[in-house]
Picture 1 (cartoon, rainbow, N blue to C red):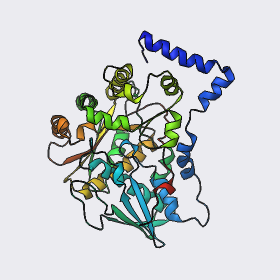
Picture 2 (cartoon, rainbow, N blue to C red):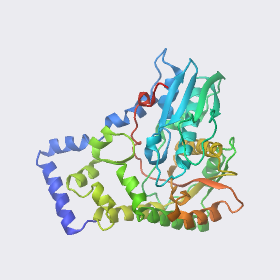
Picture 3 (cartoon, helix red, strand yellow):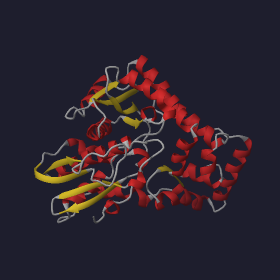
Length: 388
């Protein structure tokens, strides 16, 4: 990370403060930067369920690890009878600036539903899925149920569930000297074929270059649009304390981030200020991220009803787990698919590139080989429960 002279001096001061408590003490301080409580749901879901535990809670503990936009974790659940679970949206956890029609949030619910289904099958149980049993909402989600999920008969274990502990959204640059094999791209494209979703995965150089450019332009467009950037900045959790207190949103953790935050270089104000070092460094990082894509994968549905969005989410969950099983890094890049006015021209270009024969592009992601990254923080499964 390149820093100007004044910023470098501030970092030295922060590092000096850490070193001042002694080498062993400084190392211990850095080790404590890991938000162990916020990551505990990943460890809990990787273990064996307690004998006699409610199998719906066992499935829920895995479903909450599904990808979702800005890690908002908007799911609210109510257990019904002995076999069913009703799924609702916490309306305060939507993204009105960047997701004005709740399309991406709905896709996130599709991911949740598919992972819940896989977790039920891992217990030998089938699942009956009833999307929007009270009727589909219109332009925005409302208080009606997203789905009713009911254990129903036997279910066959799907080996994809084994990849869950390794599932990540890798927001780091990829290795540009390592291609994604054609066989892996074929497996990814076929991962969601059970659902009414068209999936394409390609490393074709011309299309790869076009999508590298598009995804970078779309990111830049979002961060120079103040209200859209501020929505993300407001959801950033800077350092271990904030991540542990609110294990949702965009986590900015780790020892280096702790040092930068301690030196006053990374704050919400600097992240929202286009003239700050933090903002410029963020642009440099994202340019490296988008330009290192070695392949791309995208999903297209014939329509854009809520049921289509749920199907797209279920397909993405399967692609995500397939990537984890293959050791391939995956990173959703949804900015060009967002439906606010300032993004309209890039949204149109994305559809010309990815769905020239019509349909709605629901998801776009980059593929490659990246570093090992930690999982995203999560609220525990019990935090999603409510009485209705």
